[in-house]
Image (tube, rainbow, N blue to C red):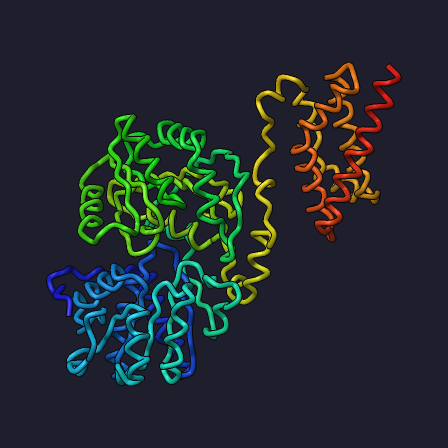
Length: 503
């Protein structure tokens, strides 16, 4: 057992007390076959709430409570709070092979993989469990444990009630979602720090979507590892956050290391941290970060959960994500409230705010729980095309040859929507786009050969436009897009030849 008796118990806020009462009433009313999911934003005190639920459940039902986590840090934090409020608990880690002393404890805290191994060998590894509490319940890995506790209540807690696997929605295992306080209400009540958001347009061309639905690490490394993106990060920090204690979230290790190197060259206090660090090195880095007022910590996939440093003043999203859960987890690291801290800053370098809205925005979590596919489709397109995330950037050499403003004055997507609203054929947008390209090329050239070279140089821009068009129409295939490109270029080429030959 972790000896944490000297830790001071955290006092529940009024809304937390009401939540405890509501959840216990739900469990009592609905009986043993009822599973409840509870949502509360990061920083709202989920650990304090379910620790108090544990204490009252044990006293009222006289059964044991099992708490599941996916990170050892979360296990330790939970154990400390339980010990502080007088709940006898034990952490089941990889060293615990048997539970001969389980009669001495009312609550057990276990890492999901460790417990799964023990239960695989002995289904009765822990006896007398009436309630299973799942921390960070959106992770799909927990459901493998549920088969062993079919007669117990399951209480899942999460800031974002969306499964980590879209094919396995949370409503498969939970009967009801209880939505807690919103981010904005927690800010207004003084429980969370407010955030000021700074967005910077970034070119995300080159990002690819992986099998898990998010952008791949390899493509993110290529995009965020280049010199221009590094320079934009440094510029954003110096413009908004210089002197702040800052957390930088990256997608890949190489990118984070480059961030560390670049900031060090500018004389900033910065350290890099990732999952390959030993426990000792990790603790050393986190201690340095805690004790250094203007420290910058650049990290990869390690501080989104189980990390609590209230003195963080700025969060930098030096990455793009398609995961609403990850988006909220990263920002939540800066939302803790202190006596001398009632606000923090968010710097978005991944067009994430454009994708998900600002952190404080209202989210219909009931809709997300009941209809997760529909909810996600409203946030993201299944075949999300990064080229729509940013404006097209012309190569520098091309900018000197053509009237970029003339090309930028035309939007094929807006034109398409206007035509549809007017009851006209959307295909006319393609013709008008061609007119725009034709006028731009003709204006910049005096011969057909020059025009042909310029048309070739504009191929990426032509493809960009036509992809926007095919995204706008309801039915489109790769073959249709290929046909559209070939026809567009052929007709444009013919028009240029006829025009310039006649001049």
